Length: 273
Image (tube, rainbow, N blue to C red; front, side, top):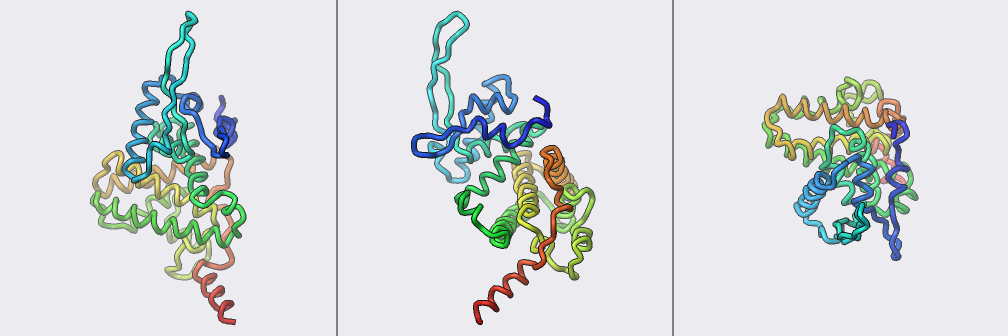
């Protein structure tokens, strides 16, 4: 399949819904979509994803349900093969632990990351939110993500966190630093750029943050230079993925009229009236 033909529908097309209305994916079907030719290699990725799930103190038995299936051999004989009934979160973890050099894996990471975050609220509730409510929700997630990433970076030997974060911005924003983004958005001195992003721009940055954290931990990145290079590379990959999906690049997304701090002040003043 040509890359340009790959979009969200490829993952939705293999989605199943059980009798209780819960969505799930089958590992054997996901294997083919993610272009793993051998089950043996794909099963190793699943094992890594299960370990990641355990480390998050989430019940793996609910996320990765083992299934025994009958497979018909060339000679007509039958044998049992292992399969998994996967939750959306399980698919997200599999994508995270897949071969990041494969373009389809990058697309899967983006798709399942965004959909999983939406599912942290119920998707229906998220869709009913106003854009301002979505901004607040995504901004809170980026704060938590940056807090975790800062701890990971510091443990890796990063002393200059501003330089480290600018490396990520440069990758995602085609060379722009945080100051460059602030100037383009016409913000006041030291005004928080993340407080002045729409929900889609925050989601793109949240994906950059979470993937950088995951990559640094998985690959045991050490040293400030290597950490900055990693953050830049992840930012660049997120940008490339947005382009491949024909999405809107972050610098082309609209800047909200009010920052989240201004919005908070406005809402508080309205409550006092």
